[in-house]
Length: 167
Ligand SMILES: [Fe+2]
Ligand SMILES: [Fe+2]
Image 1 (cartoon, rainbow, N blue to C red):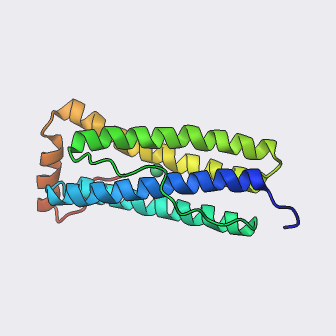
Image 2 (cartoon, rainbow, N blue to C red; image 1 turned 90 degrees about the vertical axis):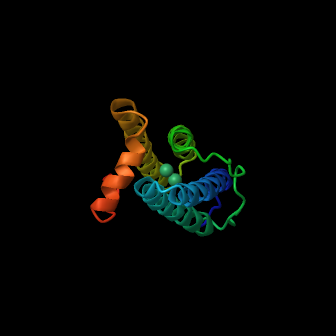
């Protein structure tokens, strides 16, 4: 890599801080959902947090390839939301924000002739859209089956040996 791409490094680092904030938030939710007995939902959030960690790793690799350094600072503090339905609403909002942000970053990288970073952001958009869909489906089920849906899901999961909700 002959030339540095300062704009790409800046965007990639902004994404790093977003992913870090999201990882912290999702792990906080994982602990609280697990503590409250919402095991399937707790496992789902943990599984998605691990994907966010992989996003962070891919961003970091790209930053180092471009000879930048990784700014390991979370974008936002953890919000102390513990009600499961409020968690789902906030998580869907976070994913939606990430989709818009990474689409924008992909376009900016394309404008700066950095198609590898562009493709990385596009690949993240695909994942964040899938995450949004998972959270949205759970919210949809609460609307369809009523406020006890999440509790019933936990009982059903316990009697089925803890498989968790399917993606
Ligand atoms: Fe992510
Ligand atoms: Fe995500």
